Image (cartoon, rainbow over all chains, first blue to last red; front, side):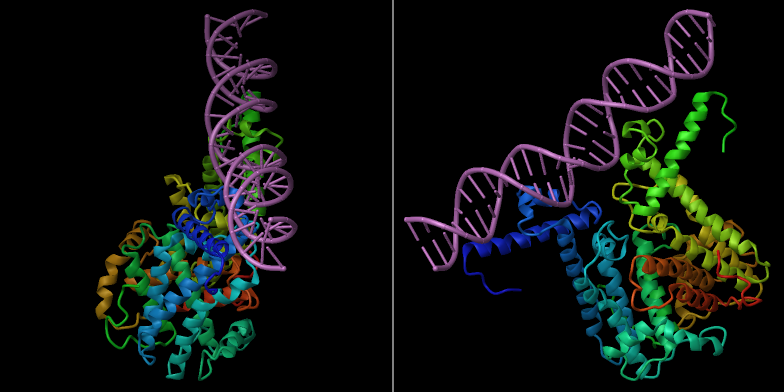
Length: 252
Length: 252
DNA sequence: CCTGAGTGAGAGCGGTGCTCTCGCATCGCG
DNA sequence: CGCGATGCGAGAGCACCGCTCTCACTCAGG
C-alpha cells in the first residue's frame, strides 16, 4: 500500500502489522469471529497482548480492518469470476458470480460469519465498511442492468398492475444506488430492482442456511443446490441461460 | 410441565429454574447470544455464579434450553397465525405465516440471532433441537401442499424439462420429510419442493438482512418490503392471492 | 551525542466459564 | 423424633478475555 519504508523501525512496523493481520485472519477462519481473541493473536505472533495495541488501538479496530479486507476479497472474487465472460453472456455472468460468491463463503466460513452473520455485540461497523460491503450487490445489479438493456424482463408480480405503483418508493434507495452508479445502462423497471434485491438476499440466505446447518437433511449436494437456486433466480429476473454449457465452470 | 411439587425444596427448585431461564431470555433479548453471560444471569436472579450450576450443568445446557424454547415459541406464533384462516385460503395462510415469522424475529432479535445467526463457537446443538427447528418449514410445506392439492403449480424452472430429472434426488431429504408427515395430501412435484425450500431460506435471509443491517439504505419500510417478498414467493409457488384483502392482517 | 519518540514486557483491573470445597438447610427413612 | 443422606448457596480459585498503565530499552533525527 505505502512506499518502501526508509528506516528499520518503519519496516518492522509494517511487517508486524501484516503478521498480526495474518494471524488474526487465520484465527478468524478456524474459530469464527466471536472467538477471535486479541491475546491469542498476540501469542501467535510471539508478542505479549499489550504490544498489539501499538499497532491496533483496540480489538474493534482490528475487527474493522478484517471486515474491510474480507469485503474487498469477496468483491474481487465475484467481480473477477464475472469479468471472465463475454459481456453479452448475462446468463453465464450471473451463474459465475453466484458460484464465486458461494465458493468464497464456503471456503471461509469465519469470514462469512463476520460479514453476514450475527453482528458482534458492542461493535458498530464504521463508515469505511459500507462501500466495500456494496460490491457484490453492485456486480449483481450490473448483470441485471445489462440483461435488462438486452431485453430481459422479470416475471410479473402477482396481483396485477395496480398495487405495483406503491413499490417504487419502497425500493427508492436501491434504485438511486443503481442509477447513480450507472449499473443499468438502459434504465430498470421497479420490478427488476425488487427481484434483484430478493435474489441478493436469497443467495446469502442460502449460504447462511448451508453454513449454519439448516439445510442438513433436506438437500443433498449443497453446491448443486446452490446452482439450482441461482438458475431459478436468473429465470425470475428474465436473464437468459448461459451461452455455452460449462462456460461458468464450477471452480470458483 | 410437571405436577405440583410436594416439598418446599422441589418448589424452590422449579421457581428458581424458571427465574434463571427468564433472566437469561431477558439478557438474550437485550444483548444477543454471544454476550449471554452466566454470571450476569446469576447476578440478575440474586445468586452467585456457581449456584446456577445446580440448575444447569453448563452454559451450553442453558443455551440448549433457550434454543428449544425459542424454536417452539416461533413455531407456535407461525402456526397460530396461519391456523386462524380458512383452510382453502392458502394465499391468506401463506401471507399470515410469513408475517408472523418476521414479526416474531423482529420483536426478538436476540432470539433470532440464537436460532438463525452465527452458531456459538464450541457449541453443538443436541438432537432435541432438530424437531422444534423444523416447525416453521412444516407449516410452510403444509400450505404449499394444500395449495398444490387445490391445483396450484409452481412456475417452471428455466432450461426446460431435461435437467429437472436430476433435481429429484437433490431434494430427496426434503421430499421424504414432506411425505412422511403428510404435509402434501395430493403429492407434490419436485419443483414445488425446490421452490418451497427456496422460499424458506429467502424468508429467513430477508429477516437476516433486515436485522443485521444489510438492507439499510436500499429498502424503505422493511415490513412492507417483507410483504412484497412474501407475495412474490407465493406467486412463484402458484399459491393464489389471499381471499379477502386484509384477511391476514399485519399485526401478529 | 542526546533528546524524544517508538516499542515490548509486565503488572493489574474487572470481566468471563467452570470446578471444588465447605457449611447449612432440608428431606426421607428408621 | 432423630439421624444420615442429599440439595443447595457461597466463596475461593483456575485460566482465559479486553484493555490500561508503567517502565526500560532502542532507534531516529536534530
